[in-house]
Length: 120
Image 1 (cartoon, rainbow, N blue to C red):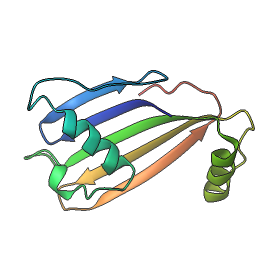
Image 2 (image 1 turned 180 degrees about the vertical axis):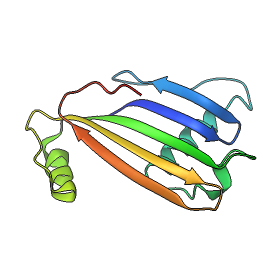
Image 3 (image 1 turned 90 degrees about the vertical axis):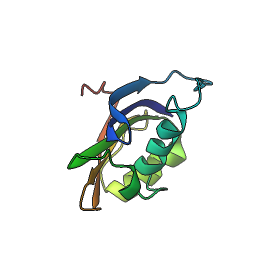
Image 4 (image 1 turned 30 degrees about the horizontal axis):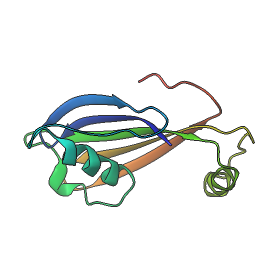
């Protein structure tokens, strides 16, 4: 489950942190309030959307980070296989960060920490 999303220099967003609770989370607001940008940021984070057109004009770098709470045993095994790192059966938190550059390049990194609160 996505617990926290941090967006920096993406389109009209200079810096925002969104904390999500378990269950249903809804984004509401007037037209142009940025709801689609938040969804677009999640797509960029997960590699589902090209980040090139989303970087805020006039900046060299943008960043989208997400903290995921992972408890599902199948997902834990998949993360362990991909990262080649031992994963606690109790789960923990996965931090994924995608950095976007004005050159059009992007860079993604992830960090796994068993049941540890992240401080950004």
